Length: 246
Image 1 (cartoon, one colour):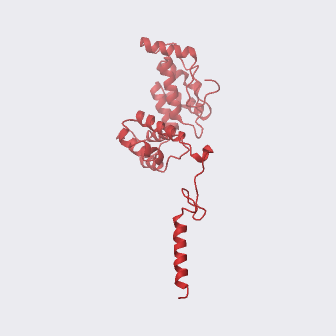
Image 2 (cartoon, one colour):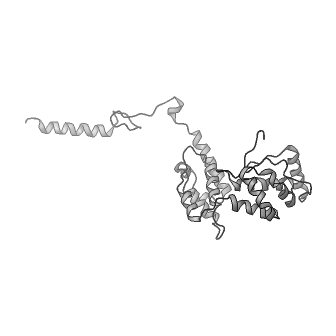
Image 3 (tube, one colour):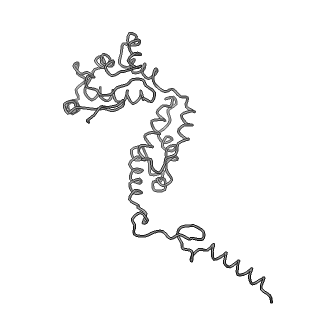
């Protein structure tokens, strides 16, 4: 992947990818020589940065290229900038394991919200017609992931919550009872979204325009077919007849 990677992105060179494939084939454990030197993910602790995304990216990189916990702990400083680097200088003396370092990062830079605030934020959202469905679902899942782990929120309940926030157009095409897990959830809703994109209105095709009544302004019929106009004319005729001299 060309260019500089931002926090949360994972970039692997062809050599690292080959090492990953080799480790999957042989089931090899992390090698003592593996390190984070080529990891492109960075975290500065700035406003708007996600420490959870950074941790996920580094953890995936660490597992893929076979970096031991000890080497990962030694190389963590290379991935921290700004306020996060300053924080690490004052914290590293009290951290002796990779897990402890990751937990300390979460506590210091993670966004801690009570569950009720997370639910309130979730239910204040509604998928917009212009918003990609898979992106909306993943964003909602990321928000639910911030809930306290005890007691855990069942996947079925998570899907119920997110499904209710989807665009009515998507829900019309994808019944809730067809969704058994998030994998099928995303696949089916994405398929529905693609189908909707293919339904180009005839007015956009330039072959036909929808009729519109100039009397009531509604689409789907002309002025001659307008029932409101017909009723209005009937009333006018009736009134005229009533007023006519006998």
